[in-house]
Image (cartoon, rainbow, N blue to C red; front, top):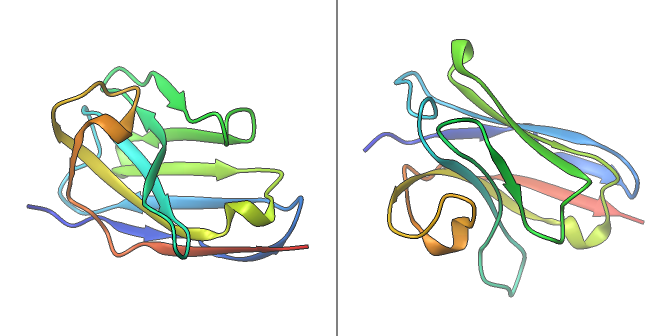
Length: 125
């Protein structure tokens, strides 16, 4: 399996923005269902956004309207634009591809593969 690499995390104040990137050199994020996940301290990992093979985005209610998932196929890169960040968005963020099962629109239902190491996002008041 390929391993994706996430980047772009950091520390911001509430209301700020960050753009996360997810890529590798093997065309892993293109032409398939991909997703963004996050895990806050003491909480389970949750799927927050996905993008289908046809570039249809889906979002968890907690991020809808603030986060945007997109893909640059030429760059083999998946993005997560995060605006109006809130302290409750503080977490380790991961990307992954759908290995099977569930529905692309809900990444909490599918088997995720090609996990990266994650990138930390910290939002302070």
